[in-house]
Image (cartoon, rainbow, N blue to C red; front, side, top):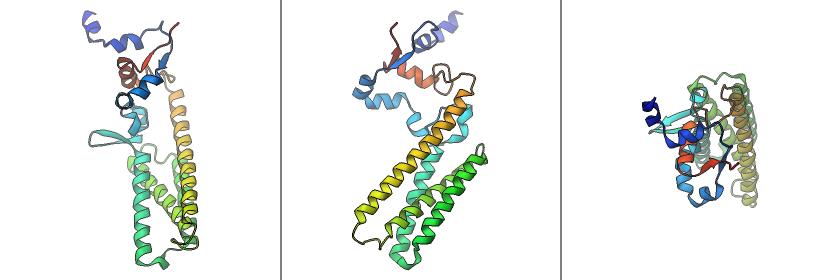
Length: 220
């Protein structure tokens, strides 16, 4: 019993105290010490998912750091496709057809959501990565179909870039809503019922936040 107590960290006593109030974030402390706060909640800023067995297939380890499969490979595929299409435009602009780019992007995006909602990629990391490449490349094709309106270097380029920014924000919003719904559905059905101080996927993060003063029990 004494050995168990000696192994207990100060934060464990706070998190396991059933009589404490709810945990409250000290936002001012987080703003004053942003780097320390980001380190405390690591790897969530890059992994974007709880680090538990339910979400093992949603992140990938690169050089010792966890990264969200969706965000990482969406970004890689998008910028790779944008660069490749730029190269094609430089070599032979006639090869880029707005009609095929736009509708190819729409069909590719629809295919991604069909695959995603079917559950095919749920436990298959390679299939999940492939689906992200489909989505990122499809979005790049749609962006190029916008850039090519009246020619790439025609007047109004700033308007087209603004439209692409709006499309990107809509894209990110949809993906964040989708991810939030998936996480909430999974966590609400879990035995820990979204109690982050008990959940193995958030326990270490909660402990670091308590130890570094970013989170504390609400005063009764």
